[in-house]
Image (cartoon, rainbow, N blue to C red; front, top):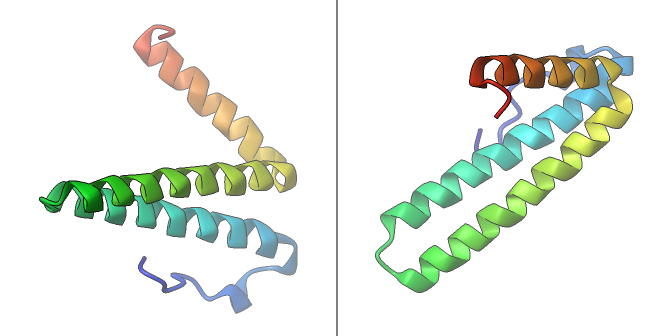
Length: 95
């Protein structure tokens, strides 16, 4: 994503705007995690690798914060996450 909002927020219904903002924030954090981890894998400098991985870990916390917020505003998301968990448990045999 690299700092560009992929949708036109002006076209989003007002009642859905906060949910869309939170999802976009999660996308941005996931994008940052991927970028930092990829750069960490490329560098030969252990100090830089360590910092990049630490920052990526912080971004993972941010994903959790935005997800927790989203779940406060989107009941359907809660149900679908549970459904997804159940499907994975069925496929993996409860592991």
